Image (cartoon, rainbow, N blue to C red; front, side):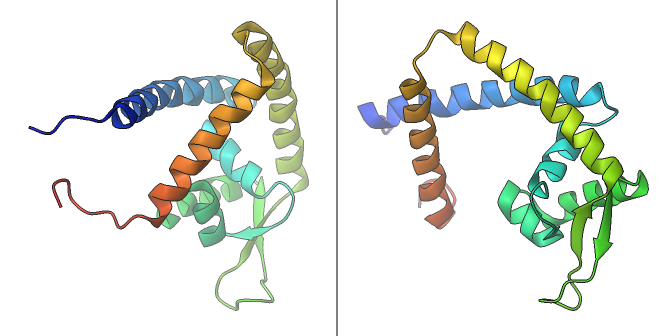
Length: 156
């Protein structure tokens, strides 16, 4: 049986911890967004169109999700009057999704709550800002490598 290198062992630990933290972050996101009748998924889609309207495939790419899951979320947000479709001058069939004033109000309220939460969390962590930036750099590099890899079954 193969053994992990020290780098492989460290990366495995990082990946496993990332999985654990991911679940905790989704739960906290649901708690924060839930106060405004939303979920983490709905909040994330609103965040993806915060600055500008985007197509469903564009939102999916930015979030690393399937187009179908984003489409379902956008449809739910649309049914609640938080987003609306508009014509896309660059593509006749792929409409742009933008926030409505109601959606903007809810997104801004959730973001305000998140700012308070994250500022308190960063104080409690007792780590230097540079350590957080270094961790972010490692995660970005991991993501970039994963995006360029041909995903093959284990053992190939």
